[in-house]
Length: 159
Length: 335
Image 1 (tube, chains in turn brown, red):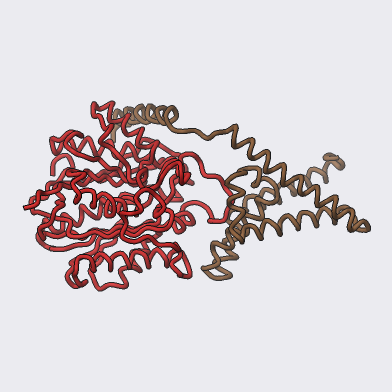
Image 2 (cartoon, chains in turn purple, orange):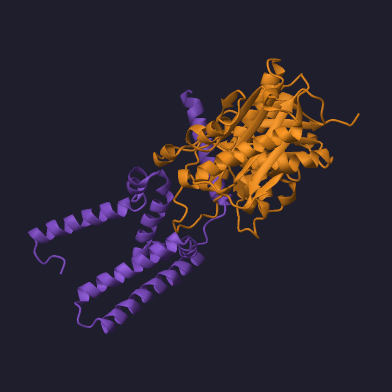
């Protein structure tokens, strides 16, 4: 392939990609954003509902523990819904609204585990559990380390 | 071979066909044309991979039963699927004692199989061959995309991998539908990087193959009653027509797409239709072959299309090369 053909091909490719951009159907951003907003909002309202309910029922328990219980409850519900084959339909409708809250993380771990169950417990399920959620853990831990180092050098920086 | 096109001087006929699909495909517009529609796409197996193997094995047996032949009367099976190492076909052929040549060209594999089968018979070295492909939504989804239960959204360009098998028995025994010529595809890459836009990636390959085919045969689109691509999808088909118009060929009214045919886009919420190695083979062996026998189509150009990427190449931001093989079928008069 000489330089002339490469140049002609590049021009042809650029023209073609322009054509695709013009003709191919695009994502309907408005409707997906509205759906994400509704689903994400419902999940967060539900979380708030649980927090208020737990504060009322377990009023002697520390607020930090209550928050942890709420997170655990939502993760448990997501795991069950994923196992029942219901959560993927919620996700298909809600998009980012179901992925961004903790529900997304729980769903990614459980769905990957179910998928690879057939390849054995250790090399299948355990090895592949975090294939989708891995980046969340990496960035979460890295960010925490960064925050910790900054706070060490500049105490009270993030207050 | 001129312009990548070969003519079969020996008379090579379709002796018999068999097709199996699953529930979703069986709820589509072509439901009455498939030999078998499976209710449970797991087929009672421990995994979807085992289910695809069982489906493929059963379809090959059905093909031989319909043709009233035993497996020792078949010289070779040319087949492929979408699983890594085409392990589906490997395990399927474990159940038979027929010589096996596994092949892979992604969703264009069926076209590759027909051409190789035709060349084998043309050479006189083989008399009767089977060409088949299989695909399964669940095995493809888990391998190429995400876990099945993951709550992610499909893009408007997404195609649904067909769960299905199509198998063709080719031989020199006189029959009604003859494979008269074929154009072997070459790898074509116009720089599409979006792994969700398979139609856009493959349309250029169809264009290049069609240009070679028309030049090599001296035919025009009007020669055929139907020019049927594998899985460009609805949007990809539109792009193909635009590309061919630039070359002064009009495909409107002559072109259709197996992926567009197999599902009802609105009712089944399949905007871009079906895809997969089993898409072109199940639609052709089920619907199109019967339509040819019924004289609805007398000259069909089948062009299975394949996107030749891998998970790794997509992650490494490589563009998507594609290929399309064209195979021409003619209905011979009843004598």
